[in-house]
Amino acid sequence: MNLRQADPDSGTAQRLLQEQAQEAVAARFSLVGVRHPLLNLLARHAVEDMMVRQRDNLPPPGGPPLFTQVAALDTAGLPDVADDPDAPPVPLDVDHLRIPALPQLFMELQNALGQPHVSYERIAAIVSKDPRLTASLLKLVNSPHFGFSTPIETVSRAVAASGIRRVSALALGTFVLGLYRERPPLVVDIQGFWLHSVGCGIAARLLAQRLGRSDPERFFVAGLLHDMGWLALCSAAPDRAERIVRRIQSTGCSCEEAERLELGTTHAELGATVLKTWNLPAFLIDVVRSHHAPLATVGDNPPVDGALEVHIADAVVKGMGIGGALDARIAPLDLDAVDTLGLSGHDIAAMTNGLVEQSQALSRLLQGD
Ligand SMILES: [Fe+2]
Ligand SMILES: [Fe+2]
Image 1: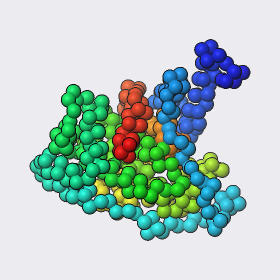
Image 2 (image 1 turned 90 degrees about the horizontal axis):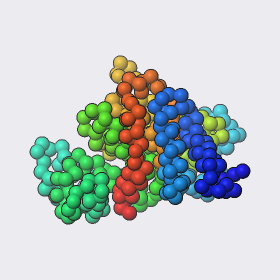
Image 3 (image 1 turned 60 degrees about the horizontal axis):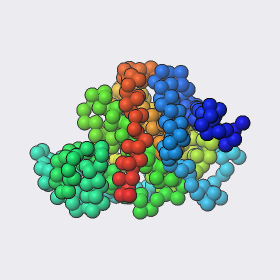
Image 4 (image 1 turned 90 degrees about the vertical axis):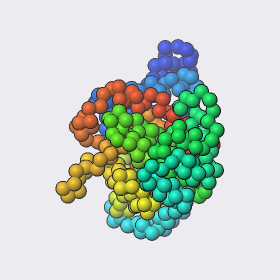
């Protein structure tokens, strides 16, 4: 019997629903398994979430499939992956990424934030110059998340209520989303991409808070921008992006392997290049570069501070099936290193609790919908 044939209220329908959810979630965990207690718990939360969504007729956590128009791409000039899996990588010229510039207003905001004792009024005056940013900020502070009993109607009150750091993170998110909103990449589903990114930012911030890290807002920004290189690649060279996805699909290899084989570099490294071009802080550049290899060391340097948190947040978001990622499977991770953080089941529960709804709400808000 299949799900359609079963009475929806019957035990059989429940069992079939559960089996279906378990199967979908198992695919996301296929590279890491569910033996580790924290991953096991994450998988159980994901199954539960999927079943509740089906029972209550709620929309699924993810967006539509990541790749939308693959068939329309002109890949005639490139050899087929299946024909020649061992072809050497064709290096990507970074100039080819044509990285768009962040608006001047962002630089103005960064300069003001860099000055000691900057006033809320000064920040509000800069924010007010951008209608989209102003609208996002007012929507954010008036959202249930902030829980103010009376509406906040002025930008300076909104800046005071949300804090300068959060305004800065929101501004960056709004501007970066705006850059690719004007010319969305052909092959990537931009809604799904931002949902994944926003979810990762929210989970990374929460994890940083629970671990007592200073300035958790920077973890939100790092999570928001962690896959920026992939967006830049899809935007500038969709044919190369498509070949990477085809290689993952045909061989089952990890996305880093596929990227190295095709490009000789990865979306993490490309993302770091994009952030460097924008003159963003070293913390963000380093975390983005290391988010798939958070424990790697270069020379005598220790692993990048903050990369492990973003990597775990990425895993949580993928585990819950939020948005669209290049590879929907959670990337392999040294679980002993995760254990050194001393995370508990409560931390995983806190990160997954309401994450789907929060990600959907903030993603809509940042996109000005
Ligand atoms: Fe990534
Ligand atoms: Fe990601």
